Length: 477
Image 1 (cartoon, rainbow, N blue to C red):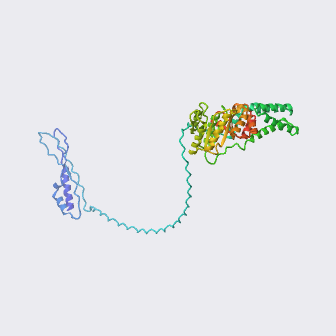
Image 2 (tube, rainbow, N blue to C red):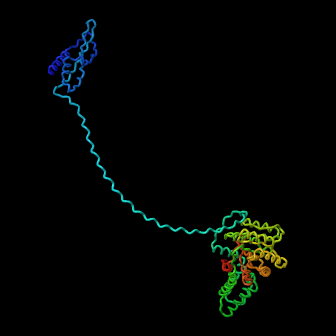
Image 3 (cartoon, one colour):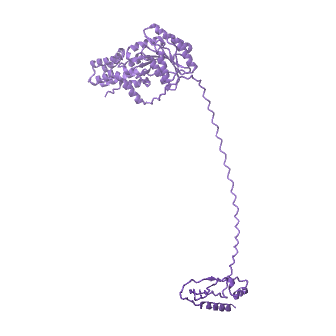
């Protein structure tokens, strides 16, 4: 049947191709008209063949067959060019032997093997228990410090930066420089005398005595020094001037060092430390009080001032200025008030406020006036009524420029109120620094302070050995 269909199909195509083109007198080429023949108009044999096909084998519909229908010839009156009949392409033969491959079956999905069971984790052995730390014994409680009674507020001092700490060498060089005037008349001349002498004779000893007296060492002290030197020379123990100079300096240093044992102030175990400052007019008592207050404050002690000088004009105002500079309270009455009453009130206030140091200023008086010296005795008696141990220190201020006159002042004041300490001021401005040697030898009163300038730090604690080295050092070259 299939072969018959093929032969039939080939005969129809041959008839179509044999169509010739008819050309009119005026040949006009026209495009061939192509028309698709739908599958429904195909030969009835093809349809019957499709129906007789096995149902199990699906067939794809044949591709549409394109046929070119020849255009009929036109009437000669109207010449026209007929298009050549389009050739109908041959239909691809479908061999019966070729089978349309059936749809490939999708292979079933392979079964996923079950996951292997994870073995249970081994049990972790429990950690060993850590032994508890030994208990640290509790620290003993520190007993609370005793409460210090409050001190009344005082006007704050002007803010000043603390003075820089100075080394011992800088203090010594400063002291040595401030004693230049005394050294010019004493140390330098003595060194020049021994340097120009080749042998020890009476002229050398006489010149040495003159130098000592000029430096205000004192007649008695100068004679004693020369007596020691002559004895050594007569015994032939000293034959050279240089050895004589060394012996003289050693003897002077021994006089100064004899004052070393009692130079320190001894503070009381309880209550305020009362210092009564005395001296003649113009020696610098009030200024010395202000500088001493600064020294005590720098050491961490509380200070109070008492304005006992009610006679000198502006003395109270001057002391208040020093109180403001140091930030300490000042107990004062009106001008002309009884100085004993001022001192009594000051001691009462110092005890009530638990002040460490009370500095009492007194009026300057001539040591030759008995009535003024009696007033000092009265002030001391009033102090003892309020505080039996007061005054703990009676400080006599001496002007070093007065020379040997200071020795007589010290003796009379000591006889009236029992002087326990000395403060030498203005040592930087005098050539009579030899008075220190004479005081240390004759008075046996300890020197507490020396003033070598106007600054707050220029009131120095007296160090006998340092002073002796600075006085006898020759730094002129």
